[in-house]
Length: 133
Image (spheres, rainbow, N blue to C red):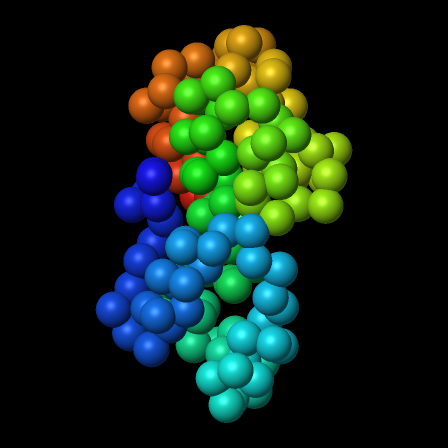
């Protein structure tokens, strides 16, 4: 797994982060997760932002994207990766991937548009894409 490249924390959200890493296909919403922790979704969102430096949505997307890059670099199909990560379809996963990295997975790994083709470099691309803007 490549999750060492997403912000991990030791605060109150650590267990939540670990749970999401262990189950990247989880479709639990912030509201549901907050309810499970007996807190409000606003309080959990603020805590998550404070402890990770990212919104819950951003962190979850980055965690899934980093996991996807590892699978895709290993030759797993886009459809299989989408399913493993809880996307409703390969096209939904591809749209997220393109929004985050600028190219569809196939084109990204083919090296089009200056994309990175080795298995280690995609991890840096995820970090770079999150720091832009």
